[in-house]
Image 1 (cartoon, chains in turn brown, orange):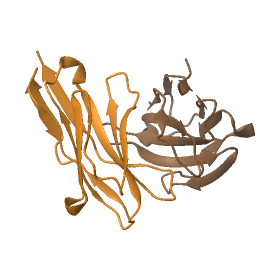
Image 2 (cartoon, rainbow over the protein chains, first blue to last red):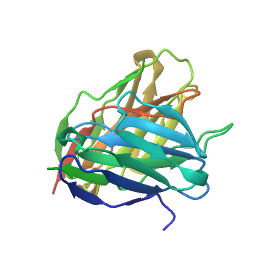
Image 3 (cartoon, rainbow over the protein chains, first blue to last red):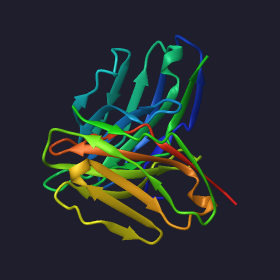
Length: 115
Length: 114
């Protein structure tokens, strides 16, 4: 399978706990994105990386959220001190960005439930 | 600021009917990209098409066709002879030139019944 993979697919956590999600992009893609999707809404941009550099962060990304992409390969998204409002689907996508940008390909997402 | 509006929240059709999903966008850029993605119940967003703002030629791919009209800032998607497997949420999205990120509409849920 050469698509974008995310782990875990589902996560249930208690309020106040920290959670970490992982995304493995398509191997030849240099750009990686995180989006959040709540019920009945379209995905909303959180942050994106080009190689290992985090180039843009949305205002949606509070101080409790941190993302990394060491060595420009996989990425992790950590949420500290989770709140019920963090319950959502977290989607990862990757693309090739340069002189010509390709479309983004998405993973199946990690569904987070904060209880 | 950019914005994508999908006014149809949910559409129900019977198999073999044709259905059009509307998408209206707003952007100040003259160079931009428009996309359609399909999200089946499994959750993964499946890429369907990308058009750039300089290419207004309509496109057909099998039962799918797209009508891009800059004059009305619309990028509508038509499924001909719909099938049950077309049931999903469809998202229209916009990316401005120089940016990689996508601005999505709220999506249209399409229910195709046998």
